[in-house]
Image (cartoon, rainbow, N blue to C red):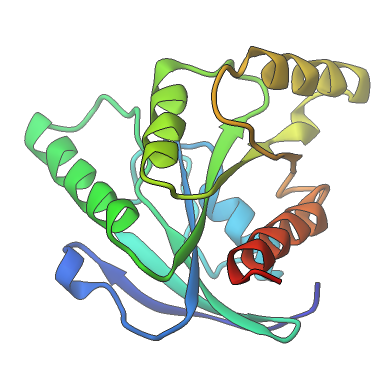
Length: 201
């Protein structure tokens, strides 16, 4: 997919700050340090559009990026990671409220992409989150990240295991690597299919 433009639009700490652009939106969510920012950068072919960090829990806001890809203009939303213990209960509750407010009541949202490290098994966090999205009729798909960390045979084995172990709503799984670029075009195609399905095309 040819990315014609990509820019940071704004970062929001409260729901009333969310942008109103009229553009369709794609949300990225997952455990802290799963590689959301790195994958976003790979998708838009930019090295530093989304800030990356080796410190879990760095993303504490919802950050919106405006992207033109092919003939489509849309927003990508980078949501705070979950599962990081070194924050206060108050701060964790604040993040949860921000994320749930976005996911539950955001008309432009067309698909939520859950990122899952290929090397990790699904936990209750991922299962419950996907069930929560399904209950609210938010379309979702799973992007398996960091596939370059495993050799091809082991990688294929892990993909099969994760698909088989997931006992939830039927979902597309896309294996990706922000380092090598593997699966990035596949993920764009999965996003396009979802946008087209939502538009009734």
